[in-house]
Image 1 (cartoon, rainbow, N blue to C red):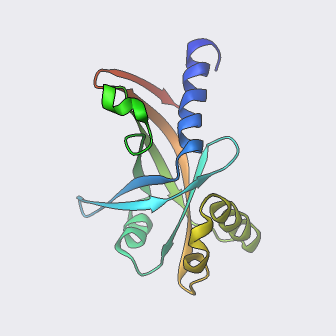
Image 2 (cartoon, rainbow, N blue to C red):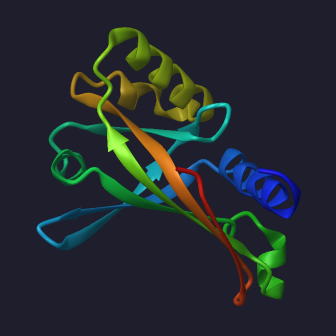
Length: 152
């Protein structure tokens, strides 16, 4: 993707890389459920990594319906927000289970690098890595400007 679309994709990736918290929205039986989550990305920001316990509502929802939405915004860290120029990135993606030990180790390592304070949590016997494959990105800049990119 070149030109303005390529620049916009890089801005969206930058926002994903510079933040560590998102709101994860899952659905079960037509009912939404939101969770505040720590996250990390792969090098190209095509995958987002999180960790949860297997016995949570969000994990059950993911197993039943793999489509998710994530919200990352800069209101907590962006000084320009007070001037009405904050940014919010909505990510649409699809959950997939981590079944191989090497991938599990890689995902947990990447997550821990981005969230070192979560070491005790990921060591829990019920901790399960979550991988979200990014399908589309919607960037809102201030109250009126938006850019949408479909990746797959």
